[in-house]
Image 1 (cartoon, rainbow, N blue to C red):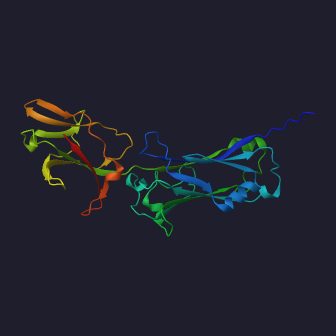
Image 2 (cartoon, rainbow, N blue to C red):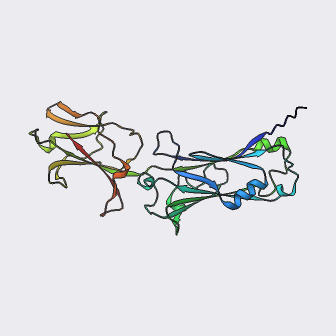
Image 3 (cartoon, helix red, strand yellow):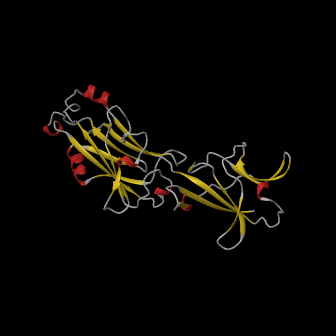
Length: 277
């Protein structure tokens, strides 16, 4: 005798996390899991939980008896986000605090689990816990408005999809250029600009490196966003006369988020990169 047993699952809920810093948009920096209480509720209601680097999903067994009493009450779910990247604050636009918690809740008519189009300091708060943590609170079947529907109507409403977006931090970029002793030049002859001609950086300023060597420093005129892959190519040029210049470096390295330092004289941040010619 052959017994065929088929279980059909319907996507119930998905929360995904994105970040403007990453080239593919996905944010892999958090571990997502249901709180212990929510794990118990998920088991009681037959939810299947699946997690990946940037999202968590719950699936529903569509063959269960939704007339059971446990499906008449609200189902409060709490998802815990634990940050696993110690460099996260360096490239993320949020308070520069080591220990903080972010609370996420649905906003009527919006996909985002935060009031603005990205996470802002309005929903970040100091925490006694170590590191950066997030708490996502979602209530399913709040007014018995899901499982009381017929099978077809319920499937038309599903799935519930929510999103969290972190924005990339902007900072003043600062390039230290050294090794120019063999070039008999004046500061005004050095130009750091985009390959398309845009001038995002101020003029070269003579400076002394921490090891005593002489060099030049360029500082961006405005804050520039940090990206995993730069959205602009910057080059270093040597003016040699009217309309004439040599290209010393075609593509300068993008400053690493690890090099982010607070500017003690302001509330801004600096990104430093050292370039040898």
